[in-house]
Amino acid sequence: MATIYRALACTVLVLYAYVVTTGMHAGDDGAALGLHLRTGLFASVTACLVNSIPFAYFLGTRFWVKAFARASNAGDVWNERHDGWMQGGAYPLMYLVAFFPAGAAIAGGLEDSGRIAAGWHFTLVLASIVTQLATVVTTPRAMQRNSALMDRLADEHSVPKPDTPEMQAYVEREAVDSLPPLFQLSRVLMWVGVNLVVIWLYLRFGTEGWRASPLLPFALGCTVLVAIGAGLNARFDPHHPAPPARSWVRALLTGMVGVALSLWMRGLGL
Image (cartoon, rainbow, N blue to C red; front, side, top):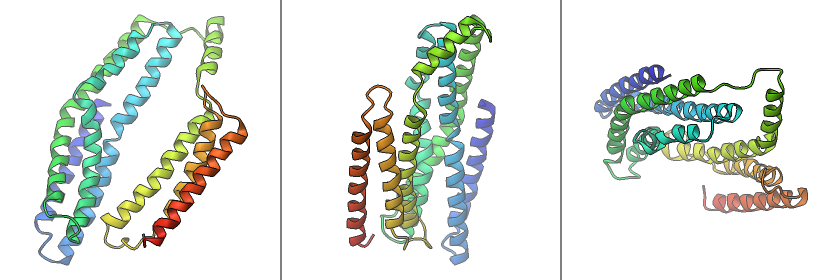
């Protein structure tokens, strides 16, 4: 995985170089500016997708380490070692390298229309390049250390064999400790709902042809998803589950607040 990420990150750097080249000629004519905007958007989306790989990798391996350690009774020390990479420099860079490209794309559209001061787009592009160069070095190393930790855990401990009393006891224990599926779904719904508004922000302030996109459809979609998610979250909370009536009252109140805010922002012309 470290090799794959390094190769993809280098590909992003090549895309950045090409986009910078198109940006140097963006003032020549409308066609050159259009090419720069298209290639910049493509590079930004590609960079965000590529730099989401480490998040998925470390999240998945963390679940594996926790499950393997529980099944083999290896103790909490392995979870602590796995989480140790968060104390290094690779962890904050993982956030920045994903956010800077999106910020650069939005700032480019805002700067082109004169809505922000000149220089912001250049600053965010430079930050995207610098952080991407840094992650080419730091993130693969963190992945390799994490992989070595998993190999050592598997070598020193073993999980119960299938169709044994030990495995059956482990399965039953996992069923008790696992998060309810509908509780996990509630988080997904709320996350998707919030991202609908993020998409509108990009269309409104980061594009040319979609600046007239109304907020209301996105806000109402966000309201529905967040309201349902809030109700499910309260109802199926594994530690403090609320009664059905209280859960759906929370969902209804969340929905009413969301609709009120949506209509208020529509009145402002958004």
